[in-house]
Length: 190
Image 1: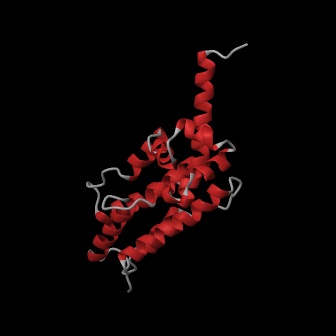
Image 2: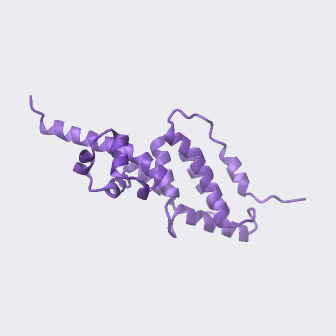
Image 3: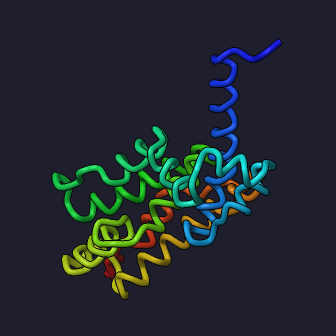
């Protein structure tokens, strides 16, 4: 019996989902420039032709992922307006937001990595670096190069996320967010 238009539509959506689910962790681990159609096809266990049937190239697959509802939610929470907060509270809020995402699953981990790996003036990295600098100027947190402190924090986040992306059975506990906040907090000596 031939397939109905609805069956074809469902099959198409399932194949596209299969491709996107395979591609997302690859983009999180290797970045947009490090992922090829070949890598996606291998991970999705499908042919190159099938991927090219739906997408022109790996950049289009990436762009499709950035249009997903989950990405939009993660993006909005990471980039929410924190102007009403003090610099120190805004820094803690970003750290807490990232830590809240660490309680989620692989899809959210991947989107967090995509966001923390972004570059530019409005990237999470740039926002963190500026908050750290301002908190240091206010003598609220420890000294050190704000760029190095930002990268150390983001590398810590990546170090927590990457094993979970690579091995869904990885179950080492996630450190308490307060421990991370303490790394930044200024110690007053008496």
